[in-house]
Image 1 (cartoon, rainbow, N blue to C red):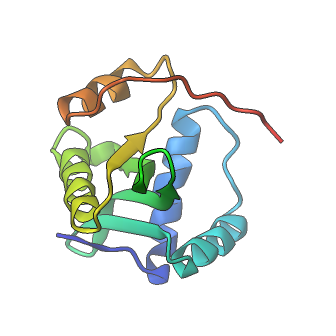
Image 2: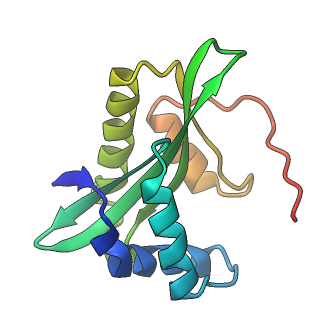
Length: 144
């Protein structure tokens, strides 16, 4: 079942975020810091988070941010995180979440949905391509 994420999902979402951070070989954010950020995000009307839940266990999560975009003349959505727990990968959960978000954004009148991933993450790039995403542009970052 896909549903809107709630603050009560915090412990399960933290487990998923920590899996992703370890996979990306970055420092795992402390849980208290994660929970504060989750509360702030859920309170922001531009934020959306959806989870796949099976038998009371969150198996995957997708988050997105909405913004008004002058160039595109409308609202644009950015998929920020997509995480499927390690033991549930390859079962179509990620694809269901992506398609759910695309349908959600279409209903909201978004002009496009964007996503970024690491350049060397060929598996993620192929996954998004299978779901209709086209590589264009370059993402530049500046650490603060």
